[in-house]
Amino acid sequence: MMKFAIVINTYVRINEKLVDYFDHPTLLEKFEEQNTLYKTIESINNLNIDSEDELSIYVFSIAAHEDTSRDDEIREKTKNILKNLKFKYYIYTNTDIQKYKRKYNSEFFSTKGYSEIRNQGFLFPIMNKEDIIIQIDDDELLRENYLIKAKEILINNPDKYLITAPYEKNGTIRILGEDVLNSWRKTKSMDDDIVRLSQDNSLKECIFGFGGNMIIKREYAEKMYYPLNIPRGEDFALLLASRLIYENGNEYAGITPKNNMFKTYYSPEKEITIIHEPPYVPSEDFLFYVEKNLKRFILEWLMIKGQNIFTFKDLKKYSLYLYEMIGYENFRIKIKEILNELKNKYSNVDRLEKEIFDYFDKHSKINRFEDYKKKQKEYIELVKSL
Image (tube, rainbow, N blue to C red; front, side, top):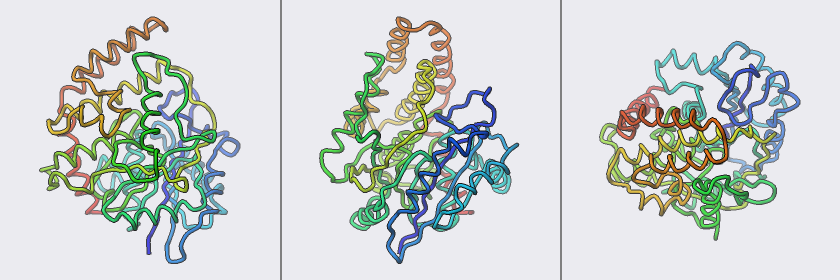
């Protein structure tokens, strides 16, 4: 018997005048018309599941900026969407998370951003002793044999604890499109990884995956957490942190190096490929997009620089994408190259340049990997107390 938990994150905008970091939040006033959660729930109702297994749905319906002022309304609107769901479900708002934050006096109960919300999708299923946690978003559809195939892969690979799988959008899993900057081949490098990892259906050890399609054993979720304060790309931040823990261990948390639990894998199996149907294209403010991404890549680069075991050459083996983004001994030089190319295409890049290098200087003052390890000890202790 397996107890499956499907965790769905849906983001709500309360105030149109405030900028938030969510890619496509649903405005509360248009929740019923625009929210894609309806289709996600419909796909879940069509799931096949073995008769001995159980499935519970966890929906985190989160208002931007940790706003709690309209949580009752958000809960009711979300509940209305879930009313025909065949499976047991739980709804959590900012108010619920804050109650647990006060109860446990822990920073891990937070809805500040993507990574913090993903961590809720570990903590609450752990409390209910779920065996397998599947994390998706509210604009993603599951194929009817998703759980059947996921179970098969897990049974056939008892030594593997985290498996990612691709998105299918417009009929393809490829990441197509032209990169805006020659110095920043973000789209091309991600597509290169997809092509490399999808040559056959075998599981491949890698640092590549999407937060909206992860299959995770509870034992893993009890040890690992999404690095905090990541402005976007929390999926890659988790996978990279996991690899660094595998290579280095964590003396604070009693984790020895080369523990296979912390290896992560990719599966291109069709049955567990998510169908991605975003409600709209996120903001076309390219400079804002670059800013969020450079900040996340600074944090990931600092994670690697905070230890000496795992090198940038090693990174290339597991992620062509991350190697292209952060595989530089002097990342400042690479950032400068990107910003210089931006100056030839956009105005007001000087403001962005100051913001990015101030951010770099601020976060360089601490060893980010050491900080992660210390917090990992706190996280594991929190999990034991739940």
